[in-house]
Length: 147
Ligand code: RB5
Image (cartoon, rainbow, N blue to C red):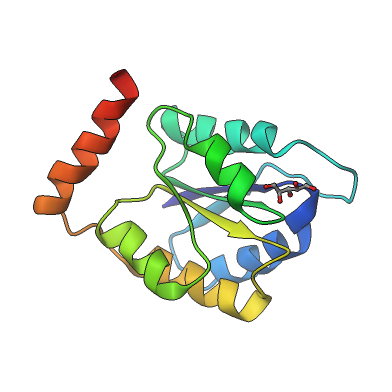
């Protein structure tokens, strides 16, 4: 599975931690689109870079981070084909995969600590979409893009 990851300046440290956690998964390759320093960047630009790789088929799923996880998740969800879930707990992370087939996970670098974030990533990486009645609802979400 190809994972693409990116953050603004508010979550560079958490991004590095998440990359360490992703090393636990065999068969997972990670591409980091930045940012890498403390200089301020605009989170919509990072969301666009990460999500662009997913909608073009170059990556399977993405992880986006900003200070709260909120702004970057809002930006990601404006991009056609993206279902981004901002998660601060493992239950939401699991459900975002099982029920919503989230293809992008958003985390807040100023909100969620390294330990909890690692558990959220593990839950999100290991949960499959359940399909069935949830597929009908996900299809309805995607249909909203064309209204
Ligand atoms: C940047 O200061 C901050 O606004 C951003 O990281 C994020 O928290 C926005 O939602």
